[in-house]
Image (cartoon, rainbow, N blue to C red; front, side, top):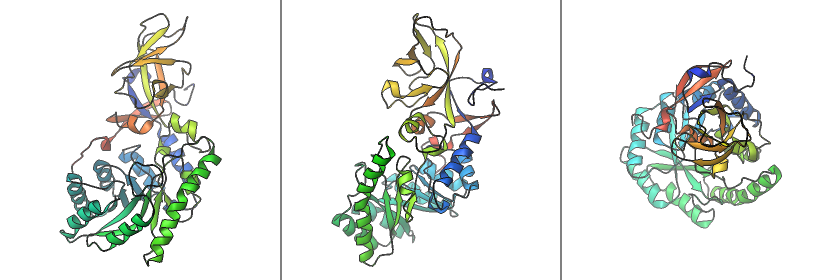
Amino acid sequence: MSSEWYTIDNIDELDSPAMVVYPERVRENIKGVKGMIDDVDRLRPHVKTNKAKEVCKMLMDEGIKKFKCATIAEAEMLGMIRAQDVVLAYQPTGPKLARFMQLIRKYPTTTYSCLYDNAQSAQDISIAFANQGLRINAYMDVNNGNDRSGIIPGPEAVALYEKVATMKGIVPVGFHVYDGQHRQVDIAERTKACNAAFEAVEKLKTDIQQLGFPEPVILAGGSPTFPVHAQRKDVICCPGTFVYWDKGYSDICSEQPFVPAVLVVSRVISLPTKTRICTDLGHKSIASENILTNRVHFLNAPDLKPVSQSEEHLVLEAGEGHGYKVGDVLYGLPFHICPTVALYERVNTVQKGRVNGEWKVIARDRKIEV
């Protein structure tokens, strides 16, 4: 029997570096997200974390019908499994707009929508769809402090919403509000900051309704603010990382019930000095946008300290008299799981302590067929 939940009994059959997923823990996380909200119809999970048909089907099996994605490949993956409703959380521009329209024609059983945050993009979308005799529902991307994309709520946003309503091939249906800037460890502080920033969105909604428009549908938040937005009865929530979870959100969002469900398996490949070891977990195997000490946490070796990393190697300080040997297996919990998943073309499934299959990370590619 496995000594820890993550230990793999037939580990000698698995080459490294490798990504392993524990399906039962994924199911536990899906049930956990449902338990945090009053109505499953208010969930629209972001699939950027998993990028796999199998996980999305597990979500669908639990009654989750609506999804959010960031790429055409992710949108196509959802079309392939006949997901009911998909928001491309991006405003398609240039060739991406043509691909988006091709996607919609190819998967007619899936209802697609997209974003816009300026008149030019909305006009381009409108013309493209109108020329095909089609109309697309679209959410105005609203910037309430994240400063990544979106229009700042206020008179200009109201005017944009009004203008888009006059266009032929596009229908404004609501707002998309991503507030990933709220990452306070204290949930009370995070809640206070989230609510303060959301006041402008609520005013924008009121202003739009006073002009005679239907009540705008609001898609809001990611993982850190999910518990806050889950309390707003009129908001659709869009967490994504919960299916796999990671070290970063485990540290920030301890109030959430999710458990790590995906790890990276690494091996010691060299002992370069008396106090240091080298593993095969390089830049190409773990997301490396964070500082060196915030990339991976080894569950079975928590005291190892990263010293350097290159494309295929991670050097760690183990200290005098350490007992590590070449071939030793390390089970790593990524700090940021989403871009780590994108580094692997497949994940290995582990059940009852044994590697027993694999899932293709089909939407890691920029293109599937469309």
